[in-house]
Amino acid sequence: MTATRVLVLNSGSSSVKYQLLDMRDSSRLAVGLVERIGEETSRLKHTPLTGGGEERELNEPIADHEAALKAVSAELTADGLGLDSPDLAAIGHRVVHGGLKFTAPTVVTDEVLAEIQRLVPVAPLHNPANITGIRTAQALRPDLPQVAVFDTAFHTTMPESAARYAIDVATADEHRVRRYGFHGTSHAYVSRETAKLLGKAPEDVNVIVLHLGNGASASAVRGGRCVETSMGLTPLEGLVMGTRSGDVDPAVVFHLARVGGMSVDEVDTLLNKKSGLVGLCGDNDMREIRRRVDEGDEAASLAFDIYIHRLKKYIGAYYAVLGRVDAVAFTAGVGENAAPVREAAVAGLEELGLAVDGELNAVRSDEARLISPEYARVAVAVVPTDEELEIAQQTYALVARFGDPS
Ligand code: ADP
Image (cartoon, rainbow, N blue to C red; front, side, top):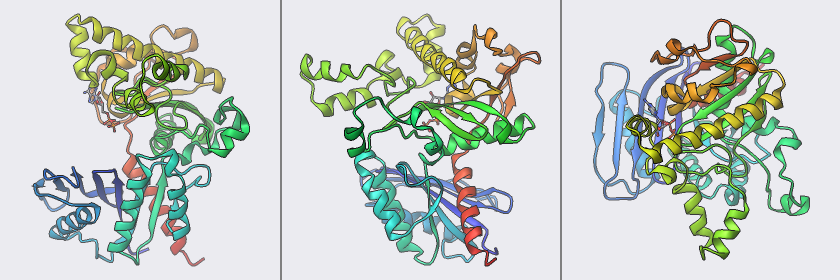
């Protein structure tokens, strides 16, 4: 294939993140972000990564996604990387919810868009923005393949025993209530990179991936296939996150409605936006929480302990699900950077073959690395995630296959 570039778009309700990659060597040609779309204070930050260009900022109102993509296109054109270039092979879109239908990256057609639209009730915050992003990109380059890469796809291999909630089957099916999982591109990428780090094929390793960002999820990956993950119907279930509660007794919702007089939307906001670390101690940045812990702040210490307790429960549960674990991999903002979280999460798990070497754990690096001591039966790894690269690779692999006449 002569066209080797892929534009990756991650469209949120008021933002668009983008990266332009050259798939010959997976290098980045430009990266950027449009924020606060539709507001007076919109901002475009663009960084060309070839030709020695400098980061540029555009501070002017950007009315909608179409205007945002046009502004991005103008910035890329100024760097000689215009979207009209014949070198552009495809545009890869992050789509949050692919339901059960989309088990792999998919070239967008009208039917595909209609199906992503049908999933809006289970992803009301994300899928509409993803659809807008795709439509806008289609209008800009109607001739180009647009590929949807789904956050849920990697988790569609979960067995029914893990994916089903134990609720009335007819009701669940009618409303598509089941566990879908999210962060799939990250779990896929990190589990594969972990196998690489161990010098093994993904088929030969069982990995527990801990994606700890502002949103956080764990997954159990057996031989390259996901068998369990901690997020469910929505990204609310599972680990303690920056602003989300993770697991709570569902009756908490009824209680807050009946006794607390809160509406469904109020409880939704409480559990998604005002809970987790921020609800427990007022901060959701792990750096700030650790600083406060070191100063002896009680609320921050309790928040940290609750965060770690939940994480440890999931490590234990996924160990049992997998039976044999070759590696535990930490990734995303907290997982890649917060040594105290990694240390505390596996502390006391020596009987399970898990341990962290203090010196290795303290090293700061952008590289995938092992932090367990030589003698440990289970590898503990820090593996930086790269969701954009994964989306670009999946997109390019798909269009390369399509473009191959054999
Ligand atoms: P998301 O993509 O979910 O927004 P990220 O994966 O970028 O999140 O993670 C962001 C979080 O990572 C921050 O909220 C902060 O808690 C944590 N983080 C980032 N850098 C560090 C660091 N040096 N030490 C500890 N935590 C960090």
